[in-house]
Length: 453
Image 1: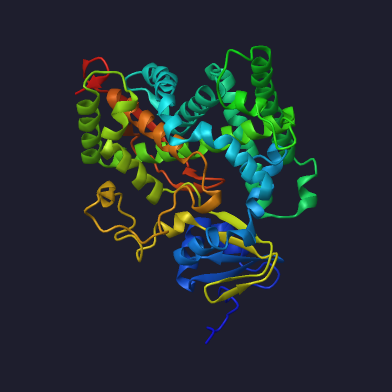
Image 2: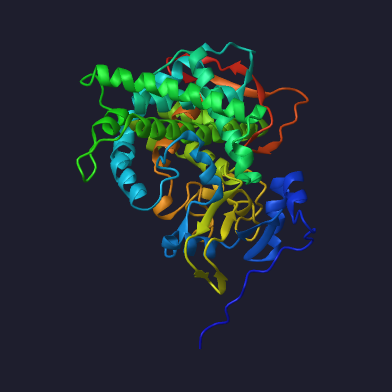
């Protein structure tokens, strides 16, 4: 007998005309967590638009793996086309498959090991430049370091701090515009010369110019580089055609934005938690000192930094950067006992799922030891910091390795102390980032090159 097929229920307290827009706009993070109490799947109304929210990790697993052919990337990723073209994060169908196959070798876990020296040499000067008792904008410092690592390892480019800050500001402005357009999905508003749109257009021009310069340098010196840009410039599709410069610009810009933002936000939250948990900070310092033992950080050290990695995993759980992700049905599909017609906008929140007490005991406690193998682990599909299925983040191994490298480099030299009286709250923009994170750099007592006491 076939199980009953249900239409997803509508969330309570819908208001005429505006639907559920007010609680979503008032406190996005609180609301997406509250939505989990309404069942495995629930519908929202945001003005005239209906959005189906998937809360069940089982239904998410089904959607992203076995039923993935029924979905495209959806509303949020449509708006990221502000980068120009259809780069990998927003490409669909055959183009997505071809681009992923093209770029995968450069980001394969075996290749990532070869980037570790570059990651270290790129981030270390920034870490070494801090001054004892200096107050740091930790969010900005982590963003600059993460962006620099992506540019050095994948693009063979290492701009000075000033130009790097300009690129970083451009990425941030474009991301904010994409989220604004997704939250108010009225296409006509995106073309109006509003101050926000003009800032986004100008920022996109800055990014394009920076990437164009990298491409021009690679074309002028084709034998000098062996990196992702070189790969994009020389690869041919099934017809023998190479990518246009605009397609390369779009791919590089999207990868730069995606590859630096998530890692930087994760690192900022990690150091915030360490500042609040001296015992965890002490354990991190002990591990880094023991593993590095005065030597420069190298690929062989990464597997030994097990506690460091658990700190990163726990940060990705408690402070997952993705408060919202989207899909859209391209054909009718059944998820569990629920029926979704074609052209259904779908949303889910890894941030809310990772804080669900039914999936993670004591979910608001920052406990890196919950990832020890002898501890009970969450059900399959409940922890997905980089997604699952064919759209899983292509740079997951790069990002995790980069986070271990930067965490170890900082820990080998510094303690980061909270500024007295500071309040840090999560801000759900394109990622969930700290409202502000000023911390005081306190030099550790050095006992040898590359280690500290």
